[in-house]
Length: 282
Image 1 (cartoon, rainbow, N blue to C red):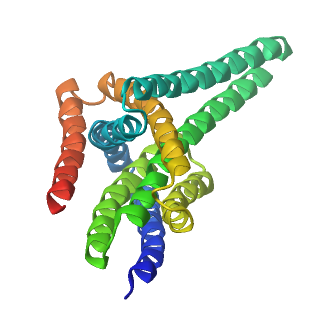
Image 2: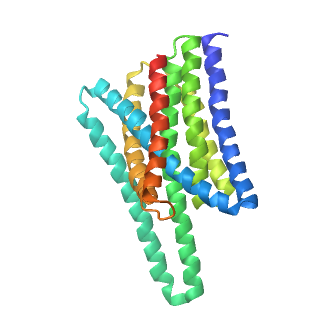
Image 3: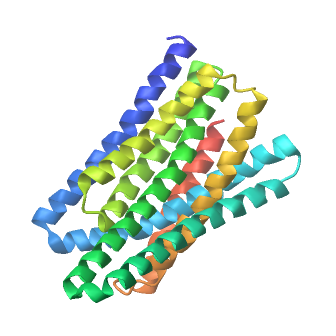
């Protein structure tokens, strides 16, 4: 098989691996919901902590180093990269606070219309807030997966190195797809909404491979856009990891706090080991 054909085949594998793990996670959640309600609650809390650790490892071991390395290569200075990461973080903060202000506005507007309408308004606001968190998470993961696809399409110079790289990225992304899907189902009972969101994310990897085939990986414009978007994505990841996920998992009272920490560390350790193995392969 020629290298170009192998890259086209890798697009199908990248999409299918994420989608399969998403479907497995949805089926597992539905099975536990119907058969073992108590086990579902325990599994969700465990997956929640593991997912926080996995995202922390992804941020520290992959996203931050890669984005800062790109910026340092283009501008010969990492300070601009830190600025972009900060902008990405504050951009998500502004979006989240805007949603909170909108919720407060709707609650105050409808408070005179009776208790029933107030409860309905609060339910709508909570739905909007969960939807915003879903879009934020898919955006951050999507940008990360997009540039993983560009990495496959641009840096693999022979078939062997291509399949090693595809295998490492598929394992890493499939793990994230499974854990993130279960995490999203804790807050979102709309299976179709979660599934479509994960489909969009799964499509970003193959899109990255396609872009690298259409545009030269040595293109200066592509490298500049790559660096800027990766740093903005890293800032988004900082918000999601530390404020949206880690904080909530550390203060939960369902588990002993030390158990939460051990589970989060286990998720972090999984990413550390896989990333080190990936670097050792090259």
